[in-house]
Image 1: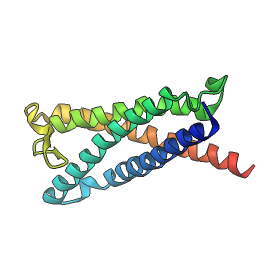
Image 2 (image 1 turned 30 degrees about the horizontal axis):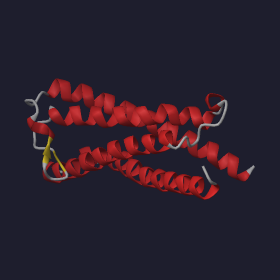
Image 3 (image 1 turned 180 degrees about the vertical axis):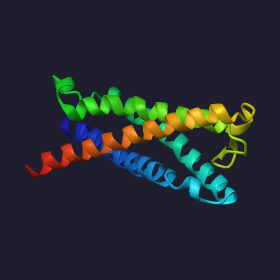
Image 4 (image 1 turned 120 degrees about the horizontal axis):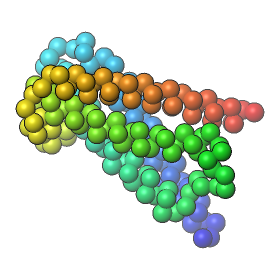
Length: 162
């Protein structure tokens, strides 16, 4: 592959990275305060949250495909580098996080319409026990993702400034 094409592939990967950072950061940070809003506002915010989550799911799949199909970021011994290992854990964890969020929306007792038309809440009847279990899993994964993002940021910061 010529150098210009490779540079382009890395540039696209970087743009996808920063779009993902923004969307994932938005969803992780905005979700912490959902419980403190009135039910009407909470329902709207959950719909926005679910739409962003679905977008993140497909963006991460596309990012994974882009990187794998162009053999980006796969240096020899990649599994020995913390940042590479972190990424190989992060991608599947984000995908699982979205799936758990969708499952949680399935069991919620009010309509959850991702993008205003994908109605997750009609896929099963409301079940507060299952919803609560999935909510706890969703929160636990969110905490792990936040720790991983902080670790990744610290590792990148160290690499840039040392």
